[in-house]
Image (cartoon, rainbow, N blue to C red):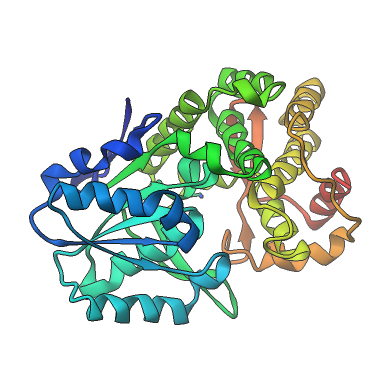
Length: 356
Ligand code: GLY
């Protein structure tokens, strides 16, 4: 088992990564079981695939456990669903000692984490991510939240889990396109922090059947854990995790959430950001070429034609634009990133033409 620590003083926790880990969760949580009520927050299909077995396992070990499901997709991250979960928890007689197990992808983790942050002023929760994206990104670092009509994740909190349990074997049950989408985020960690991890990951893309998921997930978590440990509230360093996300989010918003997968949008966003880095004289021409070719080893869906100018408002309204300043993440080399506050609209437009 690989254990990675997120060091945040009294909010520190560890991320545990191991094939088959799901079967040992009752043992791993033993110290935390003080007779309280445990609530799994998940989705119907995930309950059928993993959740009911997990409940059996925990029941057999004397845990007092119940579950709540949310709909699939972004609908789950709504004020209505948030209210419904809270009411259901009251009905189930949950109290301040209740502990949540968030079993699912990013949507489940975000809403369950936000419920944990606010139910009776905050209760404990653990993340059990079931998608590659959630394993390497959203389950770590405590970003929780829901959407409102004005935008995504506009209500939320940074509220750290007590632990993250990652079982890469869960990926066997996912559609291939979903796994591919998560691989974009893995490449991102190499791009911003570890050149040899970037090139090894991209080599492995040649044959996904032999892709070393356990190691790649653990290395991605290590990089994210180190960054979050130094900058929990995204005052500076944590912004680097947004590499590829400025244009990526704009693409997602333009094409429609659920139409273009997050990781695929980020992969295209990384190519654009790499191109901007080259234009700014940061990334050498041949490095950009290698970088782009490496990302294009992913079997990405082709993008329908779009007018880059129409994406600018999404970029301006993004949460990452603070006080009118866009903190755009650029590469100085493959494996090293920094933020740049002087990326012009013209540069953004040309960078988006690069991925057409
Ligand atoms: N997904 C970026 C972050 O957690 O900061």
